[in-house]
Length: 408
Image 1 (spheres, rainbow, N blue to C red):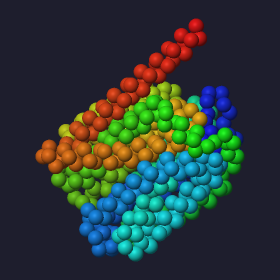
Image 2: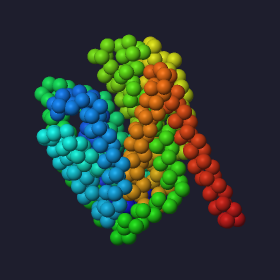
Image 3: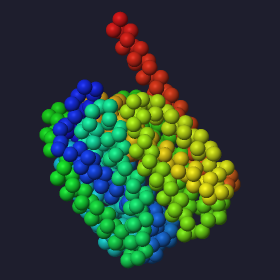
């Protein structure tokens, strides 16, 4: 199967490989590398701000540059790589990721770092999109979401292990070495993908034009909207969690990473548990996660004053992060024969949520509604995603009814 071949339909045999687990592990290592560089950069802002002689707000533009690279690179690279076999495309994407993260560590100035962070983000969405298609092609159709969730464990584990490790390395020997660590993880990913991923030929019918045809499908846009809005609620709280812990919960700065780790554990367990339900009832699981997030985020402001209650709430918010895995499979179902582009766009939507949630949460704080107000903002965004989910589900029911009527 190629990077643009259809997802497995019921009854379609999976691609045969000697060790499915090793293929998914290889893909997960890449997710671990990407998650480490994406989230650890936030914790190292003071370090490279000092090293490059800039202030913290200016240094923060490096995070925005990476997110912009993800949004731009996901559709562009996937469309241009439509005719490439998946394994080759994955290796090329990880090679780009490795080189540009290595160059980030060698940045001689702030402007060079900004450029390299943008370039580092380009392969992010395409890697996860193509990786999800590879993972789902290895298993029967009723296990697709679990396979995708296992691949995403690399990303979620990065928030628990990779980010603290990179942050410690940055403090111990310098921030540049943290990017060297990420580059080494990229090399390990390329080696593992070459060793274990199936070498299947490209789809002869694949083309950039066919990939772009997915943008004509209303269900594709609805699903991307669910992610961009519904996921924004989680980021509205996560972005300001450290400040909330300091100013509301009155924790020490040294204790903040522990609560951040609790969030990562919640995301990891969510990606282990939730996909099994999604493989049985995909849309119901997506709707349930949106409702879950709306309720937990609404509870968050009431628990922020107590470290134990807040930690439990943060853990539950993290579980809602499994929505990304569920939506990845949903996009495979509604993409038709433009699988590659749509799968990668899930991560553009994810980064749109990463911009929307913090922006609206910051507005609520700036207008005097208090440090915990992002919880209410996040709940509203989750409900907005649930509204789009309702429209999408209604269209599904209408399509089923139309097919049944035509059959009669």
